Image 1 (cartoon, rainbow over the protein chains, first blue to last red):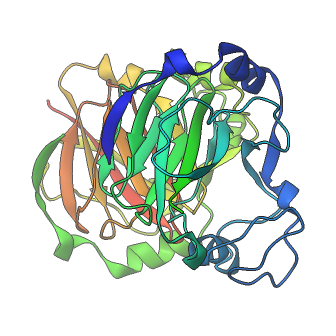
Image 2 (image 1 turned 180 degrees about the vertical axis):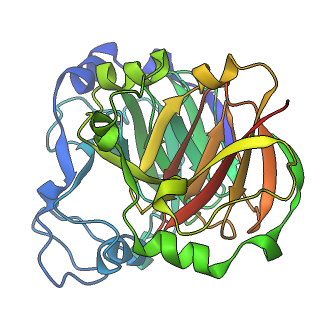
Length: 179
Length: 166
């Protein structure tokens, strides 16, 4: 995980305001995962569960009807968060994650076999505060500022985010792909 | 966080089994059963932030919940103890143990009852602790903001000891 630069000046403040003031997809509940979903099954909305995510549910530790965070992408947000940002590849996907206090993402790796050649970037959209966790393998990132951008050394690395603080935590994930 | 030592042989498997198979005290939900409990200012902020008093953050086990007693081998002084069981998805929001910090000569210790698992997180100020082993003991300043979460697939069990130097 390496720090790249602060890109807050290249993100439309209205886009961040939109995320703060609106409700995103309620995840995973809105995925409406079918009973018996299997690794690499594609949901109605085009989401793919990888092996780590599948294990959250098959282990009984987490429930697909829970709400552990909110998500924004081009389907529910008209702002293009990836525009003008660090795009190391030829195409990209973006997802904004909003976590209210008490919300979290279980520990996982992101990718499916279809994601070969992917690079993952995390851009924080709110300042760090105690209780906001951003963990990449054994490294915890803290004291970050809104706009700080980080690139995963390994797109398949274990990582997590969590908000057990007092205020909302928002980050942007961008995956870039080479042709 | 100051590392004190490892006392893994002192941790009894029966304690872990008993904790895993019993409900303990549901926090903060069960606080309403004990009107003598006074929340400190950090804890009161939880509920302003959106956490609910009716939530089950984690289970706590005090002496009255256990068939065994704890006599911490590293601490000859008087002390209190409690055990925290966090199932996957459970947590304690950020807080400082402010009431405890006002007590002169009080020390806080933290001991995991199992080896570190990926997704078991204890954050003290801005640092997390990883790679610990069952029975490791750490002394920490409980007045500093800290929090914990279990975002793994297995339970997380921690012994907390508060020592009062006479």
